[in-house]
Amino acid sequence: QVQLAESGGGSVQPGGSLRLSCTVSGLTYSTYCMGWFRQAPGKEREGVAAIDNDGRTTYADSVKGRFTISQDNANESLYLQMNSLKAEDTAMYYCAAELALQSEDCYSASRLEDYGMDYWGKGTLVTIAS
Image 1: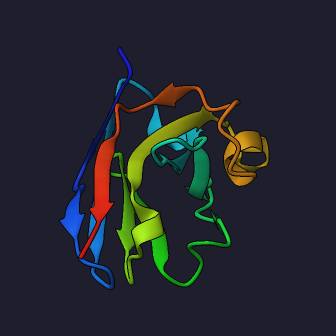
Image 2 (image 1 turned 135 degrees about the horizontal axis):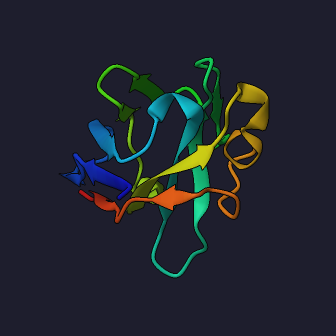
């Protein structure tokens, strides 16, 4: 059974930092590319960051320079370091996995599009408020 479990969400003030983690089980981690997505209240889900099998990263313009996606293949874990947080970063954050035997197969993740992702976690809530 495939499971993706996010953690690390919470409430911080603007300008603060959080580090999200996603632990993965039930799949061969090296054959998936991974992404972070978020959904704010009343808004559609959007892609935040992705990382492919070769470690290449993609970021939404809104988070470039502030967020960093990384992974630990040995521990089958995905991370999102979020700095300089803004009120507009408030959302439920989800990690997701897309089957990709090679980095060229990371179709949805590399485009930060959610429709082609194969597995999803349940999310962790991030709230940025004074």
